[in-house]
Image (cartoon, rainbow, N blue to C red; front, side):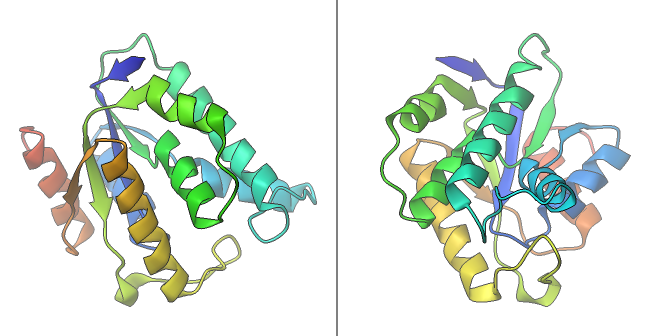
Length: 184
């Protein structure tokens, strides 16, 4: 088991403001790793690929897992603070949401690559929710995803802190203050 206490996850269902929050943290000179799902979807759409949640969800999940592991492993030697827009357990939650058969390899991976025990979760927020070319879920599915993610992280013994629905700068300050960092 590898535990990187300097790696913090920001998670939640689609459209909750995670990427906007990550961008805000980056503007404050905080190290952040972008979400792998949008990267994969953009690449698959560009290359007419099939590993998309609405075409081949299992292949999409495999790519999410491999990209998430890649991002984790490439930073193993750093002690700097990093925020991840989703983490490896999000793939586990996705597979549960999709009712895929239990994957023993995935079970091992979510327990091998551990992040800081404190995970920030953004709740569903209908006022900011938008469907676009990479996000095709309706708001109801976004809520279901949120609850599956919440349940997954809790089962994996992470401590969830819900980030309030505030202006993005206030959300960033909330996270940094929670971690006992001075607001920038």
